[in-house]
Image 1 (tube, rainbow, N blue to C red):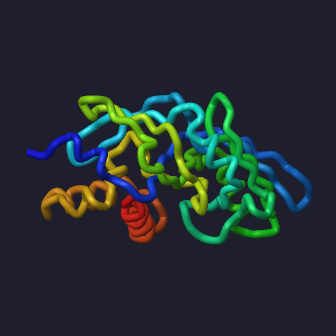
Image 2 (cartoon, rainbow, N blue to C red; image 1 turned 60 degrees about the vertical axis):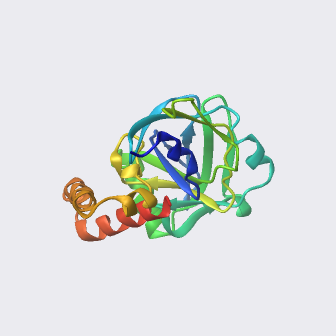
Image 3 (spheres, helix red, strand yellow; image 1 turned 60 degrees about the horizontal axis):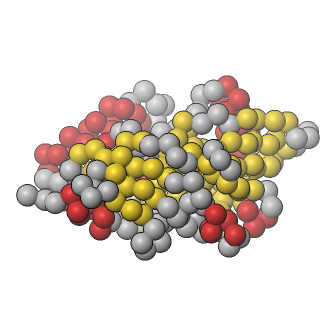
Length: 221
């Protein structure tokens, strides 16, 4: 029988997605600005792994250290494609307040991909953000029963904040890490793959969407 203590052994890049309200503002004839939160602190959410569900909380102050180190972070769409804003260029600005990780991005709307994303946000057709991060050693704390993980510090250097169609949502089993998928038997892995396919079926290009979604799961390892 597997022990819940194994939950504390996972590492690598992690993603978390949140429902968001990104405010879109015109910032000139060829610019738009979006503002919102890529992460919400002190807000427990449910995660899933090979042993079932557990609670996770990103604690207030988790971004303080990494933000003082001038991290290189890009704004992406679905964790891929060309950067739409970049901290190094000054077009993406990150800060932490009492709500969480706040983002403000200046976007060049002469780009067709930027215009499409801004339109989708303004129409309410896209309403999730995800961010990529690593947890430094010793900076997450598990409850004695391994049913709650508190993340007290994250590293977002060379990560991203992404507007996503469907991220690795904490409320779904799609947040399973690559190691967990490798440890599933064939029947369980196939059932997960088919469930993702059913969820993404309404999209215009379901096979490509599924490919991207499975690729995102692999990145969680």
